Image (cartoon, rainbow, N blue to C red; front, side, top):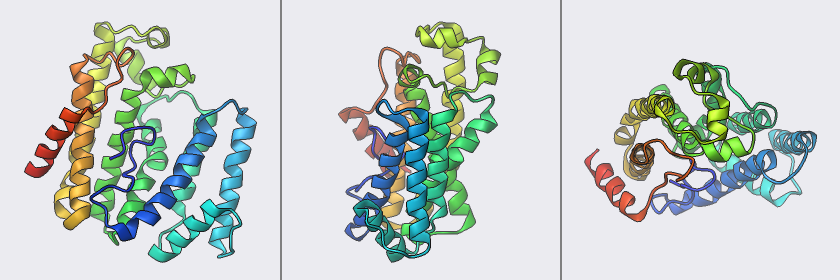
Length: 269
């Protein structure tokens, strides 16, 4: 599992068959660059949306089986054709990235889940497609794992996101626990904040455990890949708890010793 920037994407893992690496790298290049269009640099919102629309137009070119002059999209088209992958997950990703440009707050958990459905779940569905897995139970569990990973990333990056003007913690939960946006902006970590974050950590953990049986059902390398993804996500939640939810001063992330624990837990699943 990648644990830097695009954290819910297993990039060229040692567990992944070499034959799948070009496709994974092509999908990752698309997702990472589109994410950066929405998030990085000093472009205006209008410029970001226009750039993302240009990506959508390139997907339209792929849809009608026309060649692309852009090398990244040419590689993406080749990967989609070779593995018979659908375009809709990529369109869903673009929809989420466009939303990041215009939406900085979420009223409730349902709205946040809808965002995760488009920002994270498509990745899992594409990965299952590479392994030719498409049954409903597997898709459902993959969605749970990917949504959990997205939520974990949010809880890791509260401080980073507030600097970008975004808060992914649902407003209904802020009100319920008595945490204000000013508290977040100033990194206040009193009892109300800890109670709020404990609630969010348990919510993400429950989702991850809901999807975890997929890792033991799928055979071979994909099963082991998923075991490490699941246990890596759970270990990050442990790290958030270890710093007593003070994600403002120390971004919880996996160290070398954590990966030993992840490997042991993956073996025991």
